[in-house]
Length: 373
Image (tube, rainbow, N blue to C red):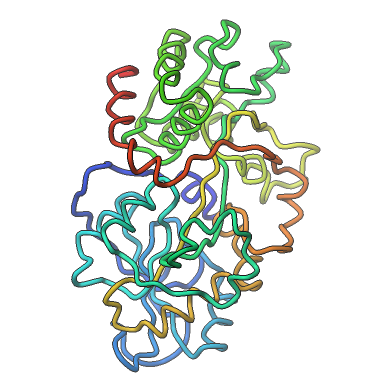
């Protein structure tokens, strides 16, 4: 699948603000492109423009047919400015907030939401169709500065073949990972440079509490946890269960990745296997929610509002799982059969309120770094 490796691993980038160069690409489906998705008008937005500019991370993707449907319904062409990983895109938007590079922003998640809101990045907008979005994912319901678009779970994945060959039950919880039978088996991402790494740490904070989580990481370190900079390194190079990991001769059968890893591994595989080669330890998951918002000072706010409305429509939500390997947030949106058959069901993921993350994130990252590295 053309996007599953890139989209699957959403690196966070440095947690400090930095200037990141962005590549301007038109939204012509998952792989980007050089032409806009239909419509007419100027290329830079502005009053009366029929182009709406979406600022996002590199992982934004939508099918050509769906973007064409938006143009047909609204008259607006979508242009996408992809700004690197999720954290870099947010930081760049904050640095340029007085002269925004686009009209709408997609890709800020609950781990970084407070940073965006505290910096006044978005104007309030109550999207049409918001009544179809469950209240528990509307984390800014009082002000409606952002609209939830998708959710996904960061979880430990395991290599089924390894655990079968060693007649060993895979771990299921955070606590399991510190047991001696799993020594030297886990690879995770650096909390300061990776979104899934940060989410996994936040999951441990929720599980063991503000006082207990550092001791948990000391135990993980003693049990041989390996830390690499990015999801790409962890999943595609060190993890023995992924297709890329097998080619790279990865030797770690446990990796911090996503609950969507199992379907991602079988999309495009013929014939379809009875089960995915990758399993999910569902007691190790942290729920991520991604949002879109109307950028403060947008030149084409009407176009931005129309796009946000469309992103929570049934059309866009149904298209999203196999484009970005995330779950739709709109009620009663059917998922693709490959998700239903191979995906992991996470009933009780760890979560933390954005305000709690905002108050402690930087200190937690420093504590993790001194403890683990």
